[in-house]
View 1 (cartoon, rainbow, N blue to C red):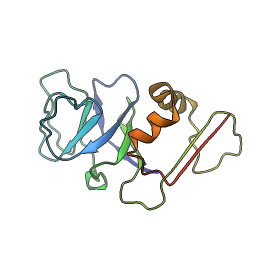
View 2 (view 1 turned 180 degrees about the vertical axis):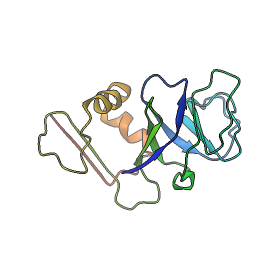
View 3 (view 1 turned 120 degrees about the vertical axis):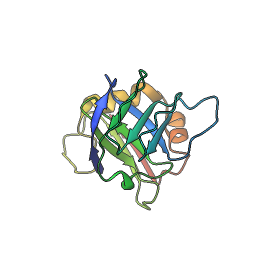
View 4 (view 1 turned 90 degrees about the horizontal axis):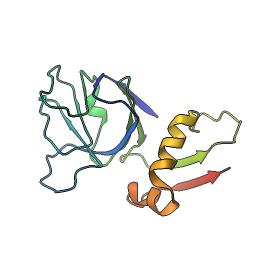
Length: 147
């Protein structure tokens, strides 16, 4: 899983969203995370990720000063933590995406979500297999849930 770091602002819990690099004129942008290099902070998005060191004058959720921002692509799925860590959990350019959701496995596999807080957040937000698949546009190669 690719990880990036930046400085988080107004983010108090884990945020999960889909990356977009184009400003959308949609009414509902609440699941999109806008990525840019010019320090823009348009409203309506779940969060903004920027490589700029600029700050927002409104109460938007954002992460600035992110190096390697070029690793983020449209339709990637990311988790943003309150400490500014960004994890790419679904890489749109990868042919090897899989989702493993488990809370009782103790095998310590490197591809497993080991942080139970992250797991509970994902499961609490989705509540069903159908909703999980919709978040990832039904492009999941493998989907395993175990308890």
